[in-house]
Amino acid sequence: MREPLAPLETHVAVMTDGAEIILRRHGNVDKPRLMITNGNGFAVDGYRVFWEPLLEDYEVVAFDMRNHGQNKPAGGDGHNYLQFARDVGSVFEAATNRWGKKKTAGIFHSMSARSALKHAVQMGWVWDALVLFDPPSVPPRGHELYEPMRTFEHKLIEFACNRPDRFSSEEEMLALYREGRASQHWLPEAQEDMARAVLRKTDEGYELSCQRELEATIYLGALTLNLWPPASEAGGPVKLIGADPEMKGGITGRANQALGLEQGYDFDYVPGTGHLLQIEKPAECREVMLSFLHKSRDRLIADPSSLQHLRCP
Image 1 (tube, rainbow, N blue to C red):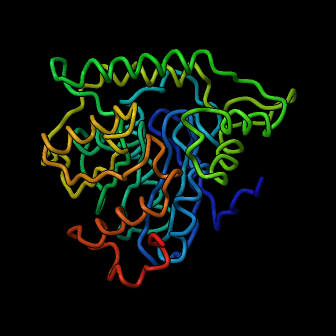
Image 2 (cartoon, rainbow, N blue to C red):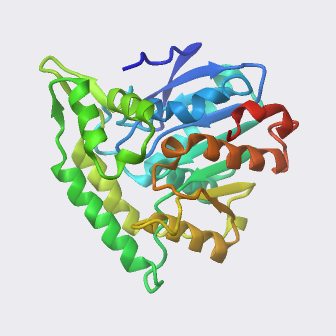
């Protein structure tokens, strides 16, 4: 496995309930800031194939959501979407206070994308632009996609509760990713990065950084979040980038396509991808994201033609 990428600087941000989240500053500090984090049960360093190529042209502040990755365990009391939304505001404020105010986009995936949208709609807009990769958007009851999404979340609850959570080595976790049906489409480097990123060293070996029961509570919480807002309520430019809605089993892609069409979001999807699209086709995901950042109202990049090295071959 390749070694983790060393940050330029780290900073411990304190959340509203006292939990701590580690911010890692990478990249070009003279450029606009991207704040990037992970989905449920994963860790941001596992998305490195997506965000590492951005470091020449952006300052990247990478952080794990609470109870994930490099953060200390924070317990279950604050492990819910309301506190996650508050955390989004807290990490933005902490980065701004520590490293100064500048043009900043939030780049979120899955669970964190739902948290960022909840924060924007219910707590206030703070970004210059917001990019949401395949949030598990559950439509209102009665919608044709409600029951398929409900079934999907229940399957994930069962998976999380029954997944192995103790390992003798990082290679044991990597073997599960290589053998898994969903993770077999990840780039090989991403499989390695994620296997390292989701584990915490213990005296006996390794354990999942995010306790499997905490992971399961978020899948259940998705069904009661009631978050299907019009894009106009977000308060600023939002890009919704989904998994391929035509892929077999691609219910999250279909749900996000419906959210985009019905509620007025700037929506695209990346063909041939599942829910972990950023580590399946990272170049294509970057291309869609960069195109949006260029045309958003505050233009986080001056000219997309200057970033050809980040685009698809």
